[in-house]
Length: 312
Image: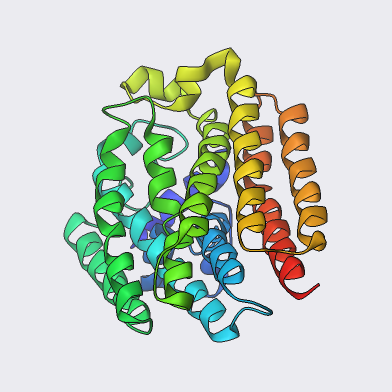
């Protein structure tokens, strides 16, 4: 544990590290829990938001009127736990690569703060908590949720194989678009599938922006990403992905009979994505991170638009 404290001190002095300096974990959490909370990225909620929002979209789309607050809360808990499990698995698989990249070298596993056996134990605990949440839903939803595990398991290996790991991340991160609908209605229908495709395109956009932070290191250690695949044509690709996202979400609203307020809200969401494209500098790592994180606001706007379309 002393080694972990020392590593964290180094991380705080390094602008290259993606470990945020002196978060609430380091101020308030028990010393023994700190590396595990960092491993699950509890202090970096953007990943949880990006996993959760397609779930909330789907719940709202499948529910006339206001979405069930219990379902909203259950999906919130599930997203928090499963995002942490995904980060733990990813760090186990990528531990040797992370140690070679300045931004990730101080993470708990490559820094030695968490051993591999303990990381697997922590992963198992998170998966059990995720299962406990999943079992609160109907049987069909449980089966749909279980189907996501295959995609989640293969994603960490994709950056070694293809320049499109962001597409596989999209398959995993937007599974909630299917699960949310199943939890409300006990089946799957066209709007859920279309919303899933919209989410995949959205993920291709925002995670390509995120990947531009690591492109130099990825080239050196032989990893692949859409950021490297698109290069200077990134903005053109993103425009296509984001246009598809808005178009498909709009189609979902049409198929489910949402009111005019939905389309007004969707217009604001489209304006936010346009802002990302117009202000993006793929060679500015801090700017890329800021635009990546801003997708939480896009997702919340869409969620509010769907609810408004249901009740107005």
